[in-house]
Image (cartoon, rainbow, N blue to C red):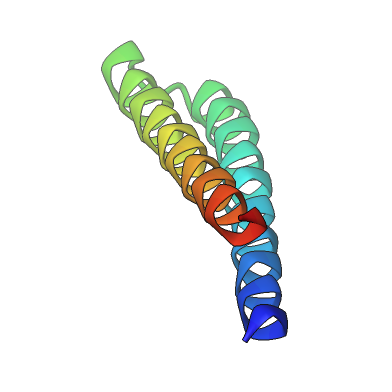
Length: 74
C-alpha cells in the first residue's frame, strides 16, 4: 500500500511542477505580447490576476502534497 501512496504523491508533485512552469510561461508571454500589441492596462491586469490564481492553485497543491506526506510518514 505504501508504494501506491508514494507514487500518487510523486504524480501530484509532477503535476504541481507543470502548473508552476505553465503559469510562469503564460505570465511572461502574456506580459510580453500584451506590451507588443498595446493592450490596455485593464487587460494586462486580468492576465496578472489569472497568473496569480495559477500560483495560488500551485500553493494549494503543494499544501496537499505536504499533508499527504505527513500522513504517509506515520
